[in-house]
Length: 227
DNA sequence: GCGACAG
DNA sequence: ATCTTGTCGC
Image (cartoon, rainbow, N blue to C red; front, side, top):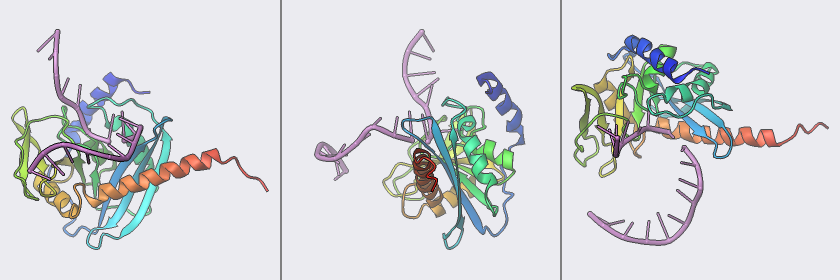
C-alpha cells in the first residue's frame, strides 16, 4: 500500500494538472453523482455513481463496486481511501457523464487537491467538489436565504464557496474539482439542490451505495446454493 | 505547543 | 463513515 508520504508527494505532483476554468459542454445532458458507503462492522466500502438526465433528472444508469478499504482515513488524504471503489464503479458505466459532483472537497483542500480534483484529473472529466462540512479555510456565515454564497478563503486564496442551498439550513462547501470554474460549480450545485440541502446527485448516489453494500453482504452470507 | 481535521 | 429517539429551539 502507498505510504502517507508518497500519497502527499503524488498530490503535490498532480495538483498542477487541475484546470479551474469551464471546459464542459455548452449543453449538459448527463450529470453524475458519486458517494462511498462504509460498512459498520467490516472493512468493506462501496462506491456508487449515478447518472442523471440533467434536465429531467431521470436516473439513466447506476454503477456500484464493493471492495475492502485500502487506505486509512486521514484528513487531507481522503481521496486515496475513496478513489479505488469510485474508479471501479466508473469503469463499469456504459455511458459517460458530461459533469460529475463528488461528495467532498476539490480545491478547498490544504494542498489544493481534494477528492474532486484527484478524481477529475484521473478520469479527465469536469468534476465539482461539494462537501457537507469544511475541511480548511475561513468564511463568514452566508445570509439565511437559499442561494446565498460566502467565499471560503485560505492563505489569501479564494478556494471555494459556502453555499446555502436551503433557507435557514447549513451551507454546503463547493469548490472546483476539474475543468469547471467556481461560479459555474456553485450555480450547478444550487440548481441540483432544489428540495434538500444536498444535490440530488449526491443523495441518489448515497442511496444506491447503501443498497449495493447491503446486497453485496447478503450475497456473501448466502453460501452457493447448488441444486 | 494547541486545536482543527472532507468521509 | 458509524453509534441513534426524542427533543430543544426558532
